[in-house]
Length: 423
Image 1 (cartoon, rainbow, N blue to C red):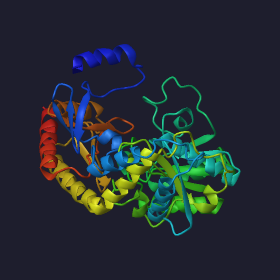
Image 2 (image 1 turned 180 degrees about the vertical axis):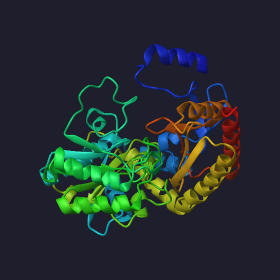
Image 3 (image 1 turned 90 degrees about the vertical axis):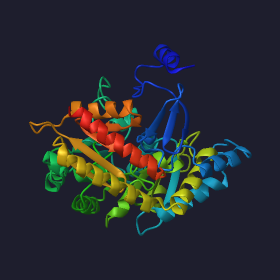
Image 4 (image 1 turned 135 degrees about the horizontal axis):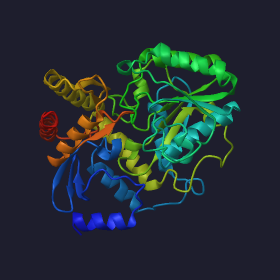
């Protein structure tokens, strides 16, 4: 079927609640390129929402999945365990930040990882409350929705949120929120809404994803760590989007002097296969009784095999260095564009987790201009994603394995799209 036929089929049978950005349907993909059912080519700067740091169909991942297919596809690890799960946990605990004994567990989605991290914190502390931040994205399930700090489209019509969740502003210099503001808001929560002895965890993203690719300031992380230590609160770093080489470190928390007690991860962990997990202090992850963590598909053997290959590719192809190199090239291009386009108000990020934020001439976030850039780029064959509480940020999520000529081609399209949007 062609794109028109598939579009009709989708509109007839797929829930409208599943939003779809592109009006075409994928037929083939390789590394940083996608081909649709009509034969059109696109350069993928979305990467399945940060899932494909190692690109589409990396040969090592394909081989690993095929090899596992020759043995078994599913046993449910908590019924019949297998070696790959334990050896992947070993690789994760060895690479996660923190000078303490660690353990890990695997699940299927990022939201599951977040829910289980919260569950572990509650069990370990015997407390009920959680503090999250404005602009955060931690999932769209009923429980994680309460943690997510962005209303549209995630919370519209969803009614009262689940759980005892309190919210503080996330530092954002461009929007007038300082580290003092953020930490002060938490301290105010302790005075007016919830005593710190009832707070099980504070969860934050080292680099906010959906909230606008906002890196946490080092001072903020240090003071957050101090607050958690002072009150016996579990510090959770949500690295579902920023982990696995995207920021130029294996985990983004490795940019900071402090360590989280529990880290969540997913997305690029398995290069497109559904797999997520948590890693953290062994004494915390051992608090839940046997059987309380897991899931029917948690740690699926095909996804586990793919994750082993992902880690190998990151190290063998030096993707940490590659992330920094590509990110610097992109940042230089964006700064050059800012010289001739005043709408480009801010360029920020770590490694290859780069954002461009756009304001109008009156000094307000400009989502309309941002969307025009996205649409003009799409017409030229470049997939871009927007984000931010105001929808005025373009985030760049190309595969770290992208070939140099294709990367340069994409930057040329970006320049043309910005110029056309400004007309």
